[in-house]
Amino acid sequence: QSAKYHRLNLQNPAAAPFLESYKKAITVMLQLPPSDARNWYRNAFIHTLDCPHGNWWFVVWHRGYTGWFERTVRELSGDPNFAFPYWDWTALPQVPDSFFNGVLDPNNPAFIASYNEFYSQLSNPMSALWNSFSTAQLQQMRNRGFQSVNDVWQAVRDSPMFFPRGRARTLTRQNPGFDATTRRAVSIGTIRNALAPTDFITFGSGKTANHSESATQGILESQPHNNVHNNIGGFMQDLLSPTDPVFFAHHSNIDRLWDVWTRKQQRLGLPTLPTGANLPLWANEPFLFFIGPDGKPVAKNKAGDYATIGDFDYNYEPGSGEAV
Image (tube, rainbow, N blue to C red):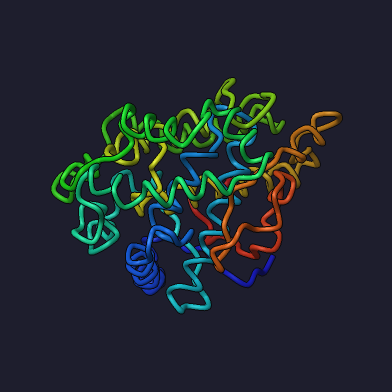
């Protein structure tokens, strides 16, 4: 069906202007004060504080997160047609060369160079953010094991989640290719296996009581998703991964594969979401930390708000896996 915005394969020459718009927006966000929720690092912290992995909210949370961020990029780049180019790693099993250009590379001098500098710039704004949290938001933080903002900083230090300039990525322009394990994880055979399940929980990841818990991981999450993150290295290895601009090209492809799976299910007359009593449990999960292009919290704050592409109104140029 037609959509207002079209997410192109980043190897398509027509995607080049969108990558330029993305660079413009990144430059603006890196220069915004960390007291502004649209600051580049503040946006990455949403992922640190709230992202689900190893549970059945994995695909839907990342759709909401990437979708709102796409709107912010549209606003801050001044490109009214902006849509995230997706990285089809099945067809291109290496870091795209464009992501070593300018601010698409997290080793670029526009990024914060050291942990100490990162902490000194973000410490007060993160404390102010924490102090602004509602009771419901604080409950989400407790689900995650964060009793105070100090716990967040301890996690950032201990994991570690911050990588200094020069170590922001392991793969380089000279050596951009995936290792053998990751090549297998993104291969068309693995993608077909990932798209084969006929129910949402097997396709996505396992059922948990809340989105900060871990259960099992579906093939999509455990294979291409995890291996690509870990093989790129640096920021991409941990929960400040959206600091690396390639994060959103990676997650646009994960979302594209969810869309492929959904259309396959529809064609076969099979359910596209959890069924029975599982559906309200899944749909009512609170997502309380997304930020809109105005820098304010968004009104859509439940998983069910992102069950379909909906108001984000984008579709995808066909890529690997479409044949299913």
